[in-house]
Image (cartoon, rainbow, N blue to C red; front, top):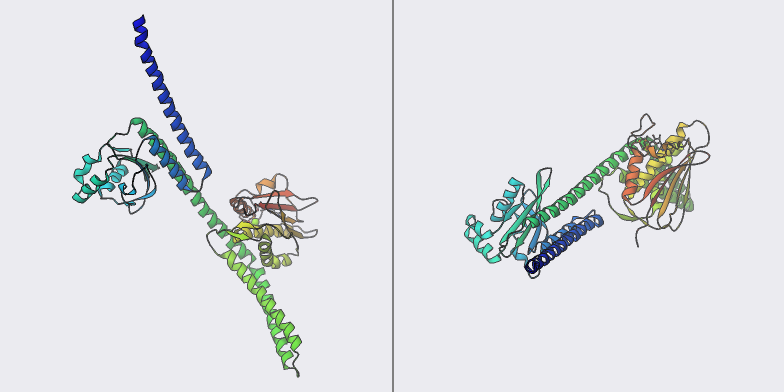
Length: 438
Ligand SMILES: Nc1ncnc2c1ncn2[C@@H]1O[C@H](COP(=O)(O)OP(=O)(O)OP(=O)(O)O)[C@@H](O)[C@H]1O
Ligand SMILES: [Mg+2]
């Protein structure tokens, strides 16, 4: 009995201690995985911190000396992130770009062919395929045990995660599994960012197509708008000539007429600049913006259209608004679409006044609020959300993309766009944009 007890106790103690070790290991792994998830959540647009967190955790948990992420390029495997253990020097790593056909490149070729983790327990045993220089090089640098895990997108190799040890020590099944999990997370992050970029590109294309279509729609009234200052320039110039021919010349009159001439010239040139800016296809850019100036620019472009449709335009732009940050052309596109929708809605109605009010004010807690309110037929409660659906239109020549694009632009800038009914009539579109952080 006694013997049994003494025999059992150390065994039990050993089991408890093993269990504790195991538990500690699992907890460390879980903490590492949640660190990676946190990195993904807090930097959804940037891969670097995600790769760095994964590398750091995996290298420490697997007691490796080096950890490297590489992405597939046409020329080979490009290093995008790396982690080194304490005291490990940079030059134990293969070159930044590992090319196929080289000693290191062969590991990657094997990975490409098998698409499975590749474990190299002792690099020295592989050196027979290396040339003299490489053998000497590897011998000196001394990474001895390697583990490569493929990053796959739909069965296609897009990159790899590799851990290295300066000593000969096999990676355990558990370590290989852990690294495989980490690599899967990195691949997901890579995919999210790739899709996001693609979507951004698609949004830019769509927005540009919408601007070009809108400018086409406005062309007749804009041409009319530009011809006016040009015609008055000619008349004013002729008047100036006549005032100069007088004996003595009427210089004061000439001065007045020339000032008007300058004003008209600038107005025509502003309109043309506005058209050019809105028609261009430029990648989205961020600048500090005065929303009131952006609104005035759009009103300038739509003035002719408003006049042609008998719409009176009012502005109520608060002074001292905070600057916002974003793409001027995109904001102007939003305002332009909202104004054109309002003019179109009002010109469909036969009766009643046609009034358009564009307002800008402070939004709580900080930021700006822009409102576009008309006196047209308005929106039924059921339509308040539907109007933002893609391809929702009630117009024979509409595409139904205007408001969809507006909402996506505003949301990309961290704001909101919505519609409310406006009593007794008319539609009221609003958007808010956060102020640029100080
Ligand atoms: N100010 C408004 N008053 C009443 N209805 C509106 C107003 N603005 C939009 N709508 C309704 O919402 C629909 C969708 O507008 P949206 O701008 O997305 O597309 P569209 O103007 O029909 O076509 P386009 O793609 O050329 O802009 C319109 O067809 C119209 O029925
Ligand atoms: Mg529209």
